[in-house]
Image 1: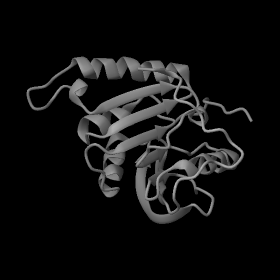
Image 2: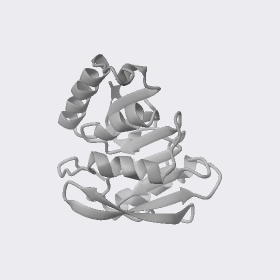
Image 3: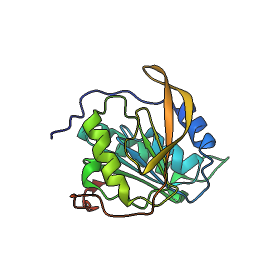
Length: 189
């Protein structure tokens, strides 16, 4: 199937920060945003919450805008905090998250408003390789017996309020069925 990067909306920075607090993230945790847009979530995850954060975005324009913003943030410093370049890690990857190995994730966010059922099913299949206990926050249901719904958070996006569902991986890691686990070879900044 062919996936499109045409439709776009974002979770607000305040709502995203609230979500990370409710997920009880700790500094150094491995975080991914599947469909990271202009990278605001990655900047917040790395700079504010000190997470090892990677965003994967299909749209070249949004990826480039995110790289420009992240580079500016990394060059800046304030008298009240460290430079963004001192963060554990903030990385933006251009490409499809279906072609990226995110199996080391501890927390995943997907602003999945426009994801199809087929996309969610493929994400769930790739997620078989995730560690037991990995948390996934998404607007849409994550299908499959490998995941348990643990919470629903009412948060705000640029399009209005929505319920973010939180799922937890309940099974030990194993290879995806009939899929080759993707590599990490992609354009990044």
